[in-house]
Length: 400
Image (cartoon, rainbow, N blue to C red; front, top):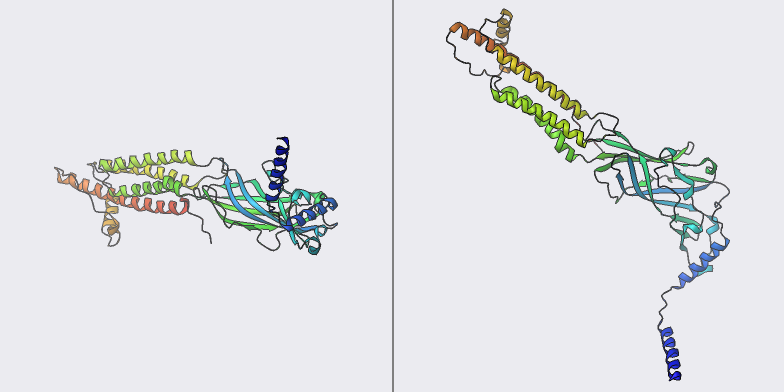
């Protein structure tokens, strides 16, 4: 029994060894030998050259977002680093024809630790020392593509809110003790690619630029200009503001002795205050400028209040039974007898019947005067609203 057990054990071991499938390619063995060779003879803390090493760098934007306060702007990128390291050259014929290999950045010198964001945003930055896999060619060319997160502060201008834009600069520098060891360059390219990027919720990148400054503290920079996706805010604020202004102008066509005009004016005034309340709830609170739409609503409140006062004054004048002043009669005749100006005066509303012909004549002259004043105020308010629209209503940024 013991002999049978021992025989079966050796038999199972022999059969299992014969069934093992070796998936390793010959090149894998050569790459391991090459990696061990470099690890034994390579000092990863020493730069590849006694002179300055030129490192080409390019950013590939993947996505971005703002924090809840719309102050910190964060981008996630793939950063392409490429440089030449003569110490990593080899003859492919000596290693089974292997022309390139993949190795980890911890086993070689990399320029990752030399670059930093400027000090004013360093406490928020995640741009620290990082690692990644790198491709090494037999010519000594090294390419590393780490995934990195950068964060900066943005200068927000709310003047054109909700079509406001924010400028978000990323400045990078090399510490003074390392300036002679490495030189970063975009290699005559724009330095940033946003193809295939996932845009952040609520914002669009409308422009960006990159640049180098080899002589100053900032060695290279990325500047983003982002614009708010404003359709929701436009539907909640801008369109209602324009609608209230149109209703305010249209109310001038109504009889100022009619309660409908008074009720519409009060409604417009109430809507303006509701718009101010809505804006206070959705507007960003960390901008350095006042949104122009607030000026439009404030002026609209003043115009509506003046329109209510004008309506009450004109309505009281139509009830006067006293004879009007001579200059009022002269003013009425000058306007109503002019061949051109009289067509800009609205048709008079129906006048109440009076028992006395003299009283009816006085009322008629007062009515003519109040109606001319109402027509004049209509054109003044219309022109004022057009100016306010051109100056204070926000408009989307035009990009080419």
